[in-house]
Image (cartoon, rainbow, N blue to C red; front, side, top):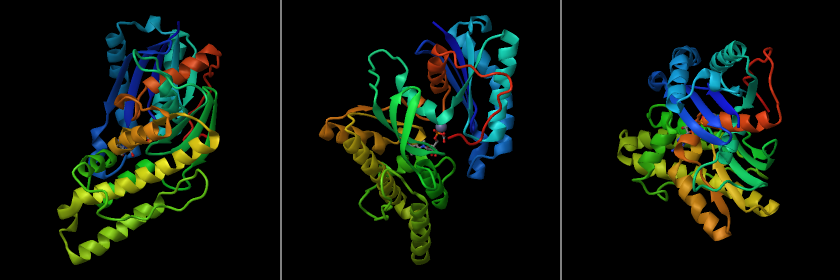
Length: 335
Ligand code: KG4
Ligand code: ZN
């Protein structure tokens, strides 16, 4: 039974987790508030905050798990994709720890990990059976993946430009909301009517996505309405958020439904930060009931960036002894 210490530092959250086999023993995260005022993540500030957070967070995670460093069998880390300066902090720390403890290193692809979080073992929560489909939607990626096994993840479709999370965050910025705007659009939308305004659904063939046109549509929509009424945003924020969110969620689910039908798959999952969206979650459940799918929706702590997902991905590599050596470097882009 391997005990794995996992490190996530791809963007602006530092995560440390400890897993024993497929079970999470402790999973802690240090969020960085410093970026809110800038309307997006500032890379230099992110890597500095990772440096400050990482050691106290490892100590807190060990203490929560009631374990010592000598109990750790392997050290896993996010190699990419992400911000290079942020990744560098996690990779360097993992290498140092591996050298000091003389334990193997395991490199993990962050996007694969979002999906593999569905394989974490939890009481009373079934895991999907292979092959299953996963809509992975985050601030950096939007993919429909056919998961054949933990080692074979086939990308059926992906975004041609912005990610779904960016579509939320950029629209939020246009509306004057702080970063990250996705959760705020979700919150305001709960009091709005999604049928009030009509945004154009992108017309893209196959299982691919595109969100840049939607963001531009929001920009012009706001500009034109403010020209008529300077208080347009303040007076209509819930309806604007609900209508815009509706377009994104419907577009995502349209493609997911098509893939499920074409590939005849009934175990359907969502993953990544945008899978925390309340309408995406509830709509998936209701479509699932209609289509006789078994749906898998991650716990909130496994939706946005976290190290537990790095740990579960590492567990599978550990079983195959797929270890990295000390020459490993972070990679801002990974397939
Ligand atoms: O997976 P994640 O934490 O980081 C990346 O790997 O990118 O995803 C972050 C993204 C952000 O764009 C954020 O606005 C979005 O997930 N997000 C949401 C919600 N919660 C987080 N988008 C819509 N509704 C939410 N409730
Ligand atoms: Zn992520």
